[in-house]
Length: 392
Image (tube, rainbow, N blue to C red; front, side, top):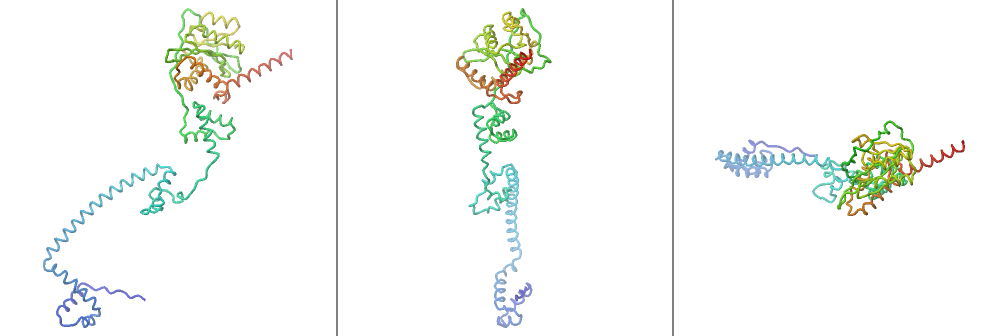
């Protein structure tokens, strides 16, 4: 059983020490008299004598204490400033740490650090300690999809998330468009495009202008409406001109050519090539450029019973189908390259148009491909014609 420690007052200790200093009794007698140990008496006497000078010069002692207190107060003020600065810095660091992702925080924990435990490191980082020991499972399917997304981006950098999604579906992957968008963001992938303002053809006042026939009509079959236009392409050696004919329903490019001159020879060559290979449309739409309002071009159409339609003055949107193709061709291919010669340009445009017709997904076609739509339309039209002949 433990005994309670006796606490003696300063007055009692002083009284005992004064009796010792009188030298009238032995330590043993005094110890027995006051019921204390001789060791206590010896300690009290030593302390009394060491501090006796304070009793003789109390002002000096007070001054020394005040000086010591002043030094301590100065140190306390410095410590307070340091603590305040550290508090501000800690708050700033905590704000920055909150913005870090989980994997970054995990990488900051040092398991072999002796000065800070893992528990304390996790507390400072705002990290659950279990995360330091969790080993995430590898999603093989996700890695495979991301690898294929990277492959598509390298082959067709012009594709955005929706077209990449369609390509993945065609290649046998079962994945949603939102997931494809998320993975592309994680991989830092964006469609590579370039944009420049369009140039418009110049009209000739002497030529007849035809009215615009496409407003309000339902374009629902191939070879119902074709349209054509000329666009400019700048090479290092000068300007060249690209003309093309497109089917409005399927968005398929039926004929095209590039020339170093913008004249009737260019547009007539493209027109005859399309007529020879794909038959003829019901309506043929152009802008009011002099090449299309010329007698040779309008006569070639009207002599075949093709209805001529022309955009309103300055209304490129009236011929939106071919204008949209120009934008795709230039943003997705032409503006991304620097061609050294006309043959080099022709070869690359031929490659792009083949890609556009047979491989590129088209949003307005429900992500189908233009030439597939065109060929299916021709097949359906021939089948319908055969049925009519049998009935007749």
